[in-house]
Length: 409
Image 1 (cartoon, one colour):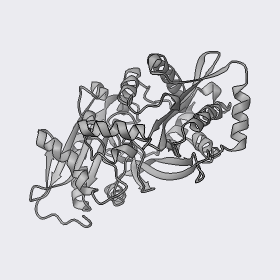
Image 2 (tube, one colour):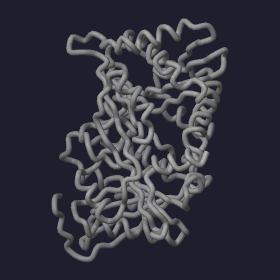
Image 3 (spheres, rainbow, N blue to C red):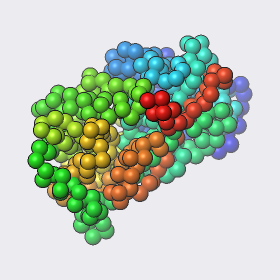
Image 4 (cartoon, helix red, strand yellow):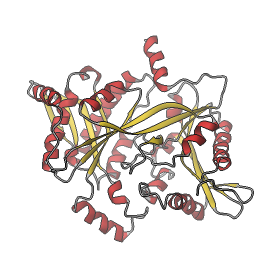
């Protein structure tokens, strides 16, 4: 579809009917059908993002989506716009978002989609737009892929290379960059790859210290572990970013329940000191390695295939989704101690070959340093862009905003 030429006047259509929803879902399947790296998101999962009964973000937000059609009535693009009032209020100005952007290689078509979202946000008093982002948690569907065009881990978006030009020519600016690090768990000889000796020594030393203990996640005690994650996450990010959005326990519990079929309890670990939760790290097996076979559908036959693929260990990669360390225990070595627990687990699960650590922002040098100390290599880069609707306000990169707040403190 390179250099697509529109045949007539283009038309933006709001997604309302069942047919509209079908076209919104199916357009990327046509756009990427010859791309071996693209994995189709489950139709049900994407639809859930826009269902108030399934997405808790609707309790404090709103969303809309559109399809772009050419003069013959064929879909040539799509986009969604949304406002999360909690996230908006955490910014220096009212800020909305766009996401699920896909378009043929035509600047006029792309700009028409951006214009449509811009008008919607402007009418609601927004002064900036972030994108492409998710209407929900930032572990999924967040950022524009600009480097590392390979099969993405589940939740990490994949895009056409020409999208970057469309965003930047329209006026979107680089708000922050998101890096994904990869590390081999096993070598060509199928033996487990050792973590760096320094990391292992620190981990073993701290693990033997009085008061420290480690536990992996258990569904039977889900509420306890949800409470522990929320306590650690909120304490860590309240220091890291003054105006961060606190993690909602109900949202987290819902997310874990949705992922129940794929979660491996022994890939989620917690560290405690005198029974107080101080750190956690969450790994998920990479569901995309199964979903690539399904073309977005989870009907009865594919459910049977899912069980088969899971049982035969089709998922050979893990993705680190989220982690956190209580501020009082950062730089203590507890991160290394958790990786030691995971290292022991890897030894009992020989089908896992690769670990993806994603994503970490360019504003988080401490976590980048930890990943690099583990021997992981940067493999992919996504960018979260910001468009300033109110041009009287200065554009500030995220890490500069953080530095400003630290100086004020």
